[in-house]
Length: 196
Image (cartoon, rainbow, N blue to C red; front, side, top):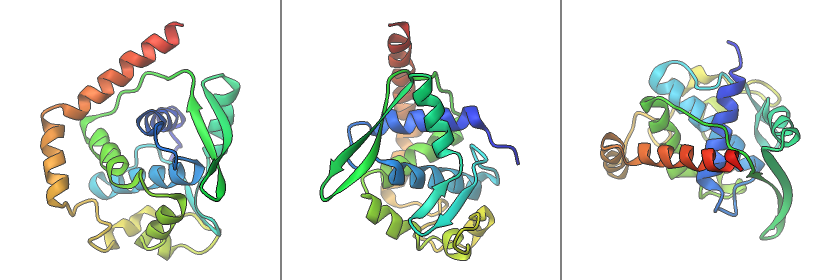
């Protein structure tokens, strides 16, 4: 399985764009969002969006290429990194300067936006607690790659196939193009920023 670097960069940019107003969005939360996006997509479509490798560490889920990609984007002047206070701790925050044009399939966008909608408000501690109960994470040993095939043994609270009424209502918005408009707005703003 080859890592899809370009797709990963675009997914990271999209997450940062959609969540830039949220003070809790640091490296830990972003890594967990990436994990849930890839693993939920795998549960539904038997493939991941980025082919990223996720590791189980003492601090939680680690996206193997996160540091390399963020360093690359910082060196290209597309991203800025800052350490900021968040309650009683300091978190690694990332801000977009230039935004690459992104295009996701309807299936990809549905999973991406569902994860952002449901998990992006959690603090690093809360999202780590949540992720640590997910079957793929539990099945991995410390320091090992988290195997996505364990998504098929998830409890219903974690399954991407189990939808609440709120998720079903959100799906109706997706079918009507509501979130696709967000992507169009995102692409338009990127053109303006990149033109400067």
